[in-house]
Length: 496
Image (cartoon, rainbow, N blue to C red; front, top):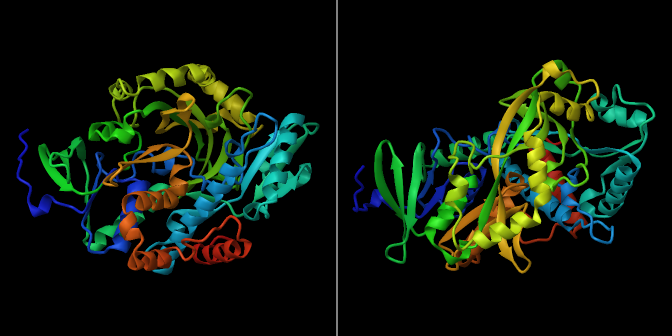
């Protein structure tokens, strides 16, 4: 393939976003609404958008609001709970709902195409786990965001909430549960397609599929030049701004950019697996996302849950996740992905993080040895009457956890992080959960980091407040504002 050095106006864009998933589509929507004249190019290596992490089968679909997920309320060394992350995640998800509500109000989004109201439930058994859940409930229910959380140790009441989980259970087993009725199941793949459809209709956003970024550099010190391969040819595009929202593929592209801010980052890949049941009679008996507590010594990412899901409009049940391991950074990636990202600049953090996370390594080794019978036995702790023949194994999306150098040495991070160049010309999103659920807040962070001058203008402020009426205000401490925001989102999105 021969690449031309000629750059015409048709190859120049105001912004180039790599990856056609929920993150890039959310950022593209913001940029277009803030500046309708901006020419934006979205590049996707696969043949359709949202096929990697964003598609419904590749993630849990939980609208992560920290209603039921234990990993967002870790225990401190003194036995107390740290709820700060839960409060922050809940606020971030409200931002997502707020934007979707505005889009629905403008006629740019049909909520029923991607969003279902679904209770979020935490369920435990055993004295120590019940004590933990009680402590979690007491701490969270004091916060405005979680005042509607319900608590129960009554078997009959819990059976009304989650009959599939309670039927066939030992009547002598002590159980407890919390419930937040205003939970959600979200098809982030369908949401991504809705964003992109609206953007392409505008004529200002171009989507190029089956196109891969093979290099990225800044030869003139001003514009970024991306070398692309698509339709059996190699060519270039130039832009003053690049966003790397390519899931696990973002790390290698960040390294190719050469910005100093990304040099010490590494990644650790973890693949996911689900047990899936498409029996409609069983799916109709379960109307919740039910999160349990990980086994002692298991890493936070291993929190088991039994979920109602809507995949391509069809109701299903998912249980998991079960972890796997390979060296790919993308589900449709290469087995050499991990090794290609090992550099002199990040080798030490990788080694140090490895020594610190032997529990994760042991957990993954154990997960690799599981067979179908083992997975069904794990399921039966949630669904005692589960029939092995009703469930099949499905491979979920690939996740790449962040490894970075901190004051404590190489550290494995389990969230998401925006890495931006000092001049704001390039930003990359690394990491995984809660990811998609907090995409709106994350993309606002990208805008603040990379478009700070325009973000301070009255025009952009006004346009943002049309999309996010509470923009610039604090949701966590303002009970009245939070109530009004939730009422608006409930009405416009049909959350009852």
